Length: 168
Image (cartoon, one colour):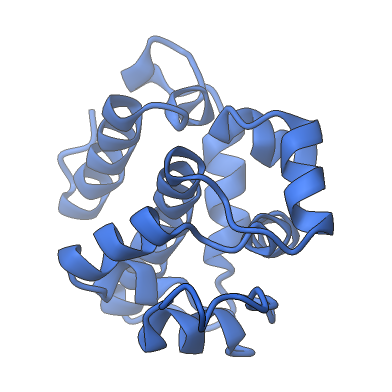
C-alpha cells in the first residue's frame, strides 16, 4: 500500500496503534487487513478508516477513483470531499473499503503461499479480475457485488475457490 496520511485526529479518536502503523507504512501490502484479528477489523470499521485510503487503493489498483467508488457504492462527491478534508469514512463506507483491501490482501496471501509472488502485483490483478465478466456470477463482473456485505462474501468465496482449485 502506498503511504496513506493518517488523519490528524486519529490519535484523539483512539485509532488503534496497529492501524495507525499500517496506514502510515510505506509498504505495498494489504495482508495486514487479512491477518488482522476480527476484533481489530471491527474496531477499524467502527472508528472509520481514513478517506485517503481510497486514493491509495485506486492508485495501487491502477484504476480511476471513480471506478473504485462505483465498486464500493460511494458517491464521488462524498469521497472527494472526505479525501480533501482528510476525514474518516463512515462506518458503512469503511466496511466496504476494508472489503476491497482484504480482497487484495487475500490475493497477495494466496500468491505468496504458492511460492511465485515475485513480480506479481496483487492490487492490479484484483482490479482486472473485479472488472472481468465471471461465469460463476452469471457473466457479471465481481466488482458489481462489492458494495454489499453478501456480495463481498460471495466474491471472497470465489477467490477462496480459486485457491483450492474448486473454482466453478
